[in-house]
Length: 117
Ligand SMILES: [Cu+2]
Image (cartoon, helix red, strand yellow):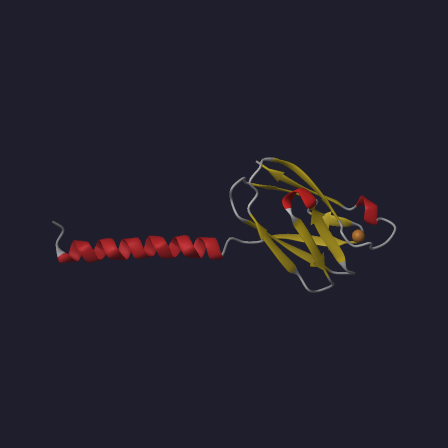
């Protein structure tokens, strides 16, 4: 049988482990994607299948969007008001997205790829 001191050490170790786990999940940094006429930066990202991921979309000029139909993503972002989307990709593959708001003559060339490994 562990003595009281060992027992408390164990409880504290478990609490620390649990706390660190939660903090790691809470703080999982969003992937910041800057969108402006007429591109995304970066214009492709790689994420892990089965792992929750947050994309933060930031616009510095006009209203844009990010639509990745096959992943159920449909965001609209206005200038200086970043938006987040959190999702868990369940399938591996390369998923093509595009700007969802018409923003000028180069709008059609605004492509964003999510690689899920
Ligand atoms: Cu656009």
